Length: 404
Image 1 (cartoon, rainbow, N blue to C red):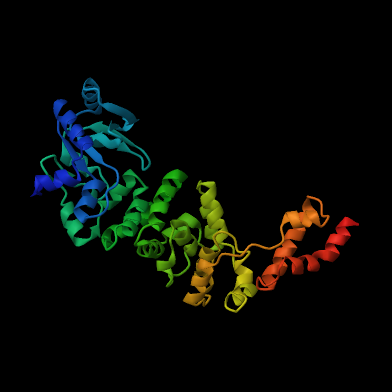
Image 2: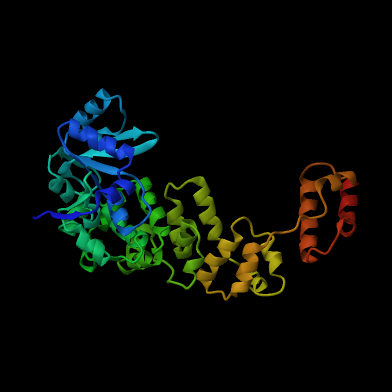
């Protein structure tokens, strides 16, 4: 296959990509008898004008030779993935992930046995998508052995070669494929490659929860996540992952400001249970659980009326987001100005404090806590118009009973 060579002005490449750390990695690869090229997301995103993430470089020397040469020059090398032919070069606090050009010897859908190859083209063939197999050398020359530039220009996400073979090498690529549909705004998933996903769904059961979570967080956090969610639903991937289909698509996408809210907006109670069985952080689980608590009919009615604050006051830290999620789930008609009021709502503090109750003769303990909650309920019910004297007067019978 012919190699597409597209020359970009070297000064432009150097300005945005070839940092001192990258140049050092290029130099080490050359000194070790090979060549280094940037590859993957950093090249793709640079060509798209997107913000840049991790820096990955492929080198045509065994990683042990690269390490030896770097250490001979007193360059910091961290053995981050040595078993997979990868190390991290660190220079002035900047990391470059360096991996020897590789070919797969054997795969089982979860792990691959890899071997060294000096060929960039062979290395490209073992990657997932064409747009991730574009290389950039230190002279600012693009090397595109698998015509990824064509897909990049067309806004298309395509597997390299036979999609079924790429998926069988690593079943996580099912989720990665969908995830790129969420994170690359304006891109579409190759329709033919979509048909290759479903026959391999069974392989997802063998993946670790951590790997699945990593993809789901990026998917639901992507700017184009509604498109990706639709794709998941169309091929039944939502049922495979969560045991239930997602809720239908809805108009409130633009209001979701975090991946947790976007995810919760899709999850039925059954799917929510499945989500929380994955090893998310405790904070993520707590947030998603809170967002999925249904609003009662009385709460729904109150939120649409003049006394909405009585519900919002006790709604908790994620109440605004919960309203968005539950609006989506139950098609509640909350006007935009009411949603704005809920979002900007800061409950005023109750005038009665624990110190006030202790001065009135209530000892510290459960009774004091219960009285504080009662005082707060009275305060909210009165639309925050009661003062301390009013509230203490209302509490007097209970205070006297406790003192007796």
